[in-house]
Image 1 (cartoon, one colour):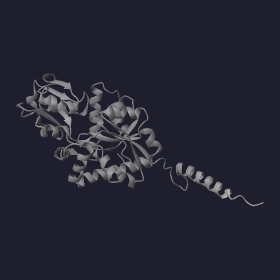
Image 2 (tube, helix red, strand yellow; image 1 turned 180 degrees about the vertical axis):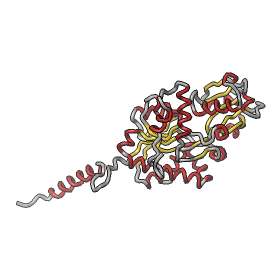
Image 3 (cartoon, helix red, strand yellow; image 1 turned 45 degrees about the horizontal axis):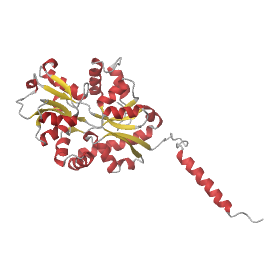
Image 4 (cartoon, one colour; image 1 turned 60 degrees about the vertical axis):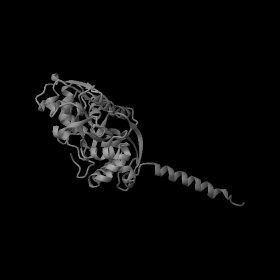
Length: 331
């Protein structure tokens, strides 16, 4: 009986299926730890200048160099939207602002860990044209816009008022979304606003007002945007998180070593005019290492205002911030 010629093909198909299945499983054994997935569902804030490290890591191939398949799990208009996606289990990692990260974690609405800083500083108090205000003390009796109550910008304003010995009762603080602040300043609906870059630089470029004081003058090295990881994803895929952090660190260093090119890339990422992007980047401190003491200070502010309920701001911050994946490790 002649052997069937189809048999080798059948064997080949079976072997291919087995290999595909084997490759899809976590690699273990031989003394190594399971590597887990290399696919990362990444969340970002749409056109956010503070998160340009993500764009640079993607465009320069830093994620690919780490063997990662970073997929955009969502480009969100606001931090709470992104944190809601973490709550729903739709994201593995993401770039987000300190306020939504701390608020959602402090209200047990999302289980995430801060694994790196994206930037510090980068906000400013701006005043409308025609307002004779040489300093913060001159804002007494004025209407000041913030992007939201209990945001980092709201905290910055209250710190600035306190330094100027101006009571919060002596000003009117209202919420205005950042894109609406420039028209509000131009129309005289608000006298001043506290907002993050590139909006202060846009205010100046559009001649709607001027910068009164930058946030580094109010609170040096204050936290702004973070790189966070879902706690479950981190536990199951520590090596992947380490690789993402490595690419992020490399991108952050690239920004600081190539300022003009980074500003040009920020222009492409945000769609802002090149002169606005360049001016804004100068007011942002790009750093990958979190400062837990700054985060704890903000946690205390939220606790005091009843936004989050935590027994100890220090213990909460230590549990939230995980710097083990950064160069040198530890916290």
